Amino acid sequence: MRSTMRALTVLASVALFARSNAQTWSNCNPTLRSDCPPDSALGKTVNIDFSSESESFTAQGNPTYGNDGVSFTIRQSGDAPQLTSLWYIMFGKVDIEVQAAPGAGIVSSFVLQSDTLDEIDWEWLGADPDEVQSNYFGKGQTTDYNRGAFHSDPGSQSGFKKYTIEWTPEQIVWQIDGTTVRTLEPANANNQYPQTPMQIKFGAWSGGDSANPAGTISWARGPTDYSQGPFSMKVKSLKVQDYSTGTQYVYGDQTGTSGSIKSVGGTIFSGGNAPVADAPAITATATGQPLPFTPHQTSDYVRPSVYPWIPDPSATPTPQPTFANYPGLPSGWTVSDSGKVVPPSSATMSPLGSYTSSPQALPTGSSDNGPKTVTGYDDRGFTTIRTIYPSKTPAPTISELENNAATGVPAAPAQGASWKLMVSSILPWVIVLVHIPGCLSL
Image (cartoon, rainbow, N blue to C red):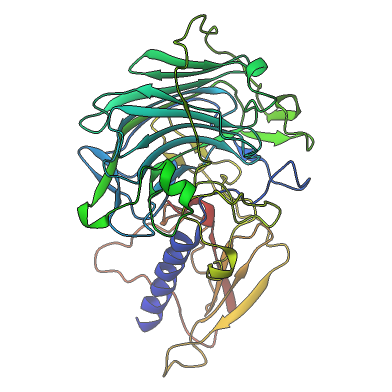
């Protein structure tokens, strides 16, 4: 029984490790490197209700869930809760129901962002309850900040409103409650038109924090007074239509152009709405800021000095282990119409490839004949655990974990039976492999 409990404790601790160490951004810029992994494609339409946690997103900063959807709450310096999709779209339409956070210096953000740092945004400043900003960036270029625009948006903090971004090769359209407030065509984007596969990211952060540069604090209408908080952004629902199909989007070269993107098993831009002919004139421009959801941990990326809230590298703690191809879904996994991540009917084990392990000490008093555990990483960078039991019959294999819930675990024993994970110590050793895809920790 002690051995059984020890094995279950190992499983629980591994699940927690995967959850706490999963990253919310890609760690590879395909315009700078030729060995970046493919992006997992949505390739369909999904409708997601955020009254409970969605398996299509990974969380950072402890967002909470309730009848009003998911809340991103800022209580103190350093809080920056957010959600990031596990999949990408290659052109498409996204509708999100948002109630922006109040508070001077507080920024609510809804972002489409690619591994090459293409970006399309909605941004709400807590000090401006009657306005919203639209913005875009191409390849992370921040030589100037004239891309943003202000739009009238009364009531953004008092209730939910629907905000839309429709992105095609011909045009980007921003809408509020179905009314177009801005359009952008490639010819008017100064060679910075977003055109590479995008993740969806949204959350709140404190642009007015005293640790930020003066320019960021000023843009966010700060400083932030945390004693007036907490400050919460809420998202009720999300509808995402991917205008391309397939299972993965692959960069064919390092140009970062839409023509270089290939679809595995599908078609790039298989359909979309006709361009909008008329849109309101832009009457005021915003000094937009690149958002803090950018993949700043990649060694190839030079972070502009204006980035909000991110400390200098010298003040940053040693990063936790990252996964080279996060985010992404293992081969055969799919996303349902409600955004649920679905494993294949018979998940297969990925080959270990090169494996680095380190033994973990057994609890005091454990016999040398008891189970032994080593941890390491497989050839895809996923955390693995090997637990060795003295048994003639192989113990159950847990092939994949989705959202910290095991699949492939044997059925529960009949009432009164005992699930034994080890038998007589005189029998030969067998190995149980636990494969934890850290990128699916949600």
